[in-house]
Length: 217
Image (cartoon, rainbow, N blue to C red; front, top):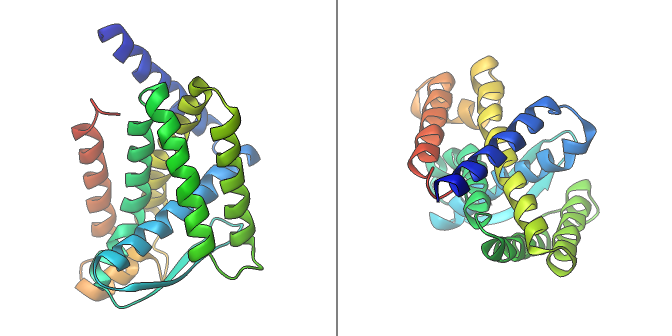
């Protein structure tokens, strides 16, 4: 058991190191846009969970995203972006623990992408709709054609990258520089708590969740 756990940890570390080494490589660009989608889905799901409705999700090729919603609790909606992409990363890591659960995870990813694309990603004639539709087709192809072991590595790699990108995004957007209109700046306007304080809170919460769930991912 210990050796198997060691192998899994070593595999995650290697994936993480590879992601950081090739962080700006064009091959990682699709993964970055996917994580932006997970970020926006965090906003969307928080809006639904607090009684609101989702109008649309937009994505741009420069890794930008925008979720338009009506109603709901603004505090929770704004807080759910970075934490949403982190949560999705943890989910993919959890489902990728074994080859059997990885197959379930890839199916869940494919279903999530299809539903999100058809219901929320707008406008239809846009980069975001084309990207998410292609991503959903790739996920469906992995379900149908890839072996369980390949599905596991894909899901684990996506989980590691999603977690890294979420934490890196908080550091880059909130702590290193303050971006007007960002989730943190809007929360600062809403709560009168400085944006960097929200960044530190999100980083601490994310690190705490990862530590608490370390045996499960």
